[in-house]
Length: 241
Image 1 (cartoon, rainbow, N blue to C red):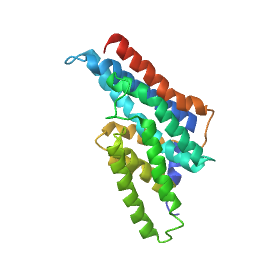
Image 2: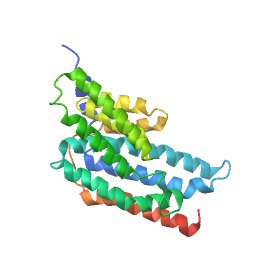
Image 3: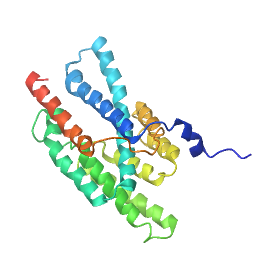
Image 4: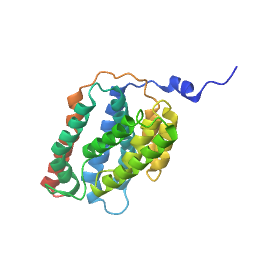
């Protein structure tokens, strides 16, 4: 009997639906942002607070891979890609002041822009790449063209000072290319951002996705990002942290 393909072997680990994984990602992001907004600025030397901060930072590395994974999942599953892209862009606009308050305690900082814009750019990149699949039937040429576009969008991400810049574009591309082979997507995605060593926790959790949406609110998913950033930004201003 021939051995089962690795993707089939993963099925016994695929126990979490989309809602459960997204809530894990939200919690991870919240812990990371609480750490960066309220703990990191007041750390002085070693001690218990530093250990708490380090733990929150490790747990915070879970979020990014999951959000990139579900961006690509959304690209393939959404009924309206244009609306999906527009929602990301609109919530990017709504999130920018909260993001700048959270990161810099100012109402506008063009040198660092929020993750919603990053997701919108990544979605645009894989959408354009995907649209050329039928126009460039030669697979080698299409892969070459797709890599060229990834390079262009990576430069654009850095030029626009987007959160996670070119790393996000590369991870989104890998999840897109290996959509039917999640182990490859997660493994190569981790290698592409291996400097964030604990992101393996998030990439590993991507492999537990069972393909089911689960019970979730679309607008809560969008609103959580700007709302929690605004609260943390206002707390920074109030306590002058």
